Amino acid sequence: MRTDTATWWARPGLEVRDGRLTVAGRDAEEAARTHGTPVFAHDLVSVREQAERLREAMTSVGAPIRIRFALKAQRDATFLRFLREETPFVGMDVCSPGEAELALRHGWAPEEISYTGTNVSDRDLDRLLPTGVHINVDLLSQLERFGRRAPGSRVGIRVNPGSAGGLLVMAPTQAASTPECKNGDLTATYKGGDAAMSHVYGRIVLHNTSDRTCWVQGYGGLSYVGGGNGTQIGAAADRTPSNKPRVTLKPGDKVRSAVVETSYAPYPRKKCKPRKVDGFRVYVPDETRSQFVAHPTTGCANPAVHLLAHKAYH
Image 1 (cartoon, rainbow, N blue to C red):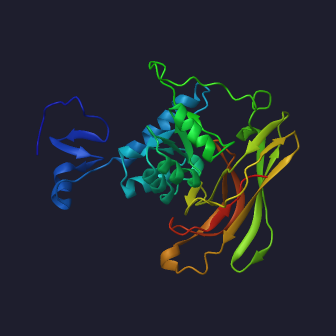
Image 2: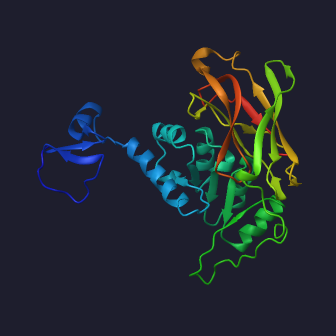
Image 3: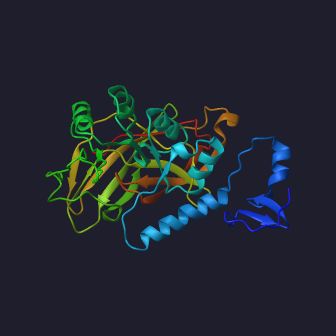
């Protein structure tokens, strides 16, 4: 397969070299002969670079952002594993309960996932709400049904200004005077506790080290990291069902999330794939920037093995 004609679609990672089509530096015809056709090839380096460029562009103007990848665009397990490990700042945008569950299975924490569907059914709500993912609605009837099932919870509103049926959204009054705590307002630490039957019981503590009063509500994000570079080790922490009170923190106040760590030792090495852990990656609720908290231990690299669980902040 040779060509010397310039093409409009050529770009780094998808280009013609010496008359041969290459994908991510590999000969396309050779890949097809090796793997058979049809063969789907992805330039993973380009994926990472584009995500990083998007983050840099948005943060350069000081805009608060949350980057989400549309799961409906690509569900390949190898692709998702690469995205999770190489671009930990990228969350997931899903459009069905099945996609939400798929994202959770591949290591995304509930607070890193947002669901945006159209005409969401009662059955879908009943599957989505227990997962803890962020839900967006686009009809008043959906908002009412959501409110009946999860009163006091946070919900996103999708507005279409060009539609006569678009939602009119009123800002909530309860947050008018006191803002929600941001990552920069709080300092995370870990306090160890008792150990029993292959479990260690501790807590993540968020200390308001700012000069303003703010509030925290719900679950944060929690996972092991290692490799000396913040690479996530294994699955993110599961959410233990608990009340989610809104806690107002004055400067100097603290809020805590109970954490349970399960030992890797009972699991077969082949299943666990033990890895040294440097500590925790901690996300303040509703924040996309994380903090590192040192906590050397051993975890399981296999995301199917869940060693961490945590409760909402109290």
